[in-house]
Image: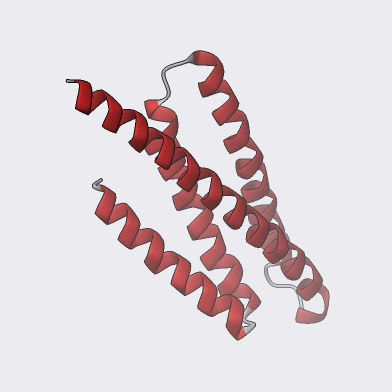
Length: 130
C-alpha cells in the first residue's frame, strides 16, 4: 500500500471516528475507534516495525504495539460483553471502552508519526549517500 493510500485511509477513518465521538453515539464511536486503532496497528507493523533492523529496537517497538493490542482486545471484549444489554447497563462499559480507545488512538498515532519521521530521515540519509 502506498503512503498516500495509508494517509487517505487514516484521515477518512479518523474523521468518521471524530464525528461519531462528537455525536455522542457510543456504539458508532467505539466501532469507528476500533477500526482506527486496527489500521494504526497495521501501519505500525508494516511501515515501522518492518523497517527496524536492530533486534532490541524491534523488540521495544513490538512491546509498544503489544500494549495497544491489549487495549484493542479489551475494547472488543467489552463491546461483545454488552451486546444486547439494555442501555442502562451497557452505557458505562461503552464509555470506559471509548476512553480506552481515545487514549490508545492518540498514543499510537503519536508513536506511528514519530517513528515514521525517524524512518523517513534514515531512509533519506541512505538515499543521499547512494
